[in-house]
Length: 228
Ligand code: SF4
Image (cartoon, rainbow, N blue to C red):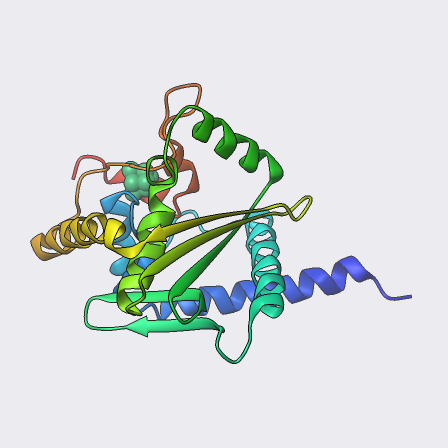
């Protein structure tokens, strides 16, 4: 009998290797998916610094899960005029969008259904998507600017029950935020020295620690370079 778990693990291992290779050949450009992150984290990524805390097996499985949902959506919505997986690069930025249509780019995000519950709570409290998911807005906004589309759409899909929530944003509303962010990163990079630790995403945990650091692949390295 075949051992399904072993086969899946072997597949994931291959995927992991591919991801590592992608990291080692990283373009050195500002990636749309890094917008909103801690500047020090972006600095490490752009300088291809070795990760002190690379994703563990579970995290890689979660990434693979996300890829499955992306593919699921892309297979359903792609047509001759709706093109999945477009990449844009220039001298400064690198952007991958999940879908390009005539008047919009789309970014797909998969999450646990509890994430939908948190989003609804934020909306009930009067917050906008720009306030509680700024990193996603910047990412899709840069995509829309690079592909010269009027609209930037964020589509969330629940990994538990396939619920979908879509936010249709105007590129002109996001443009000032994106430009400010890219300019700030360019400024940090032009100084050429490691910037101070300044986590900006996800707020703090119950103990008051910045949550972004928990997801950061450079956490231990950053801790030892705190005096810089
Ligand atoms: S560990 Fe935290 S402060 Fe340090 S680079 Fe990562 S996100 Fe920034």
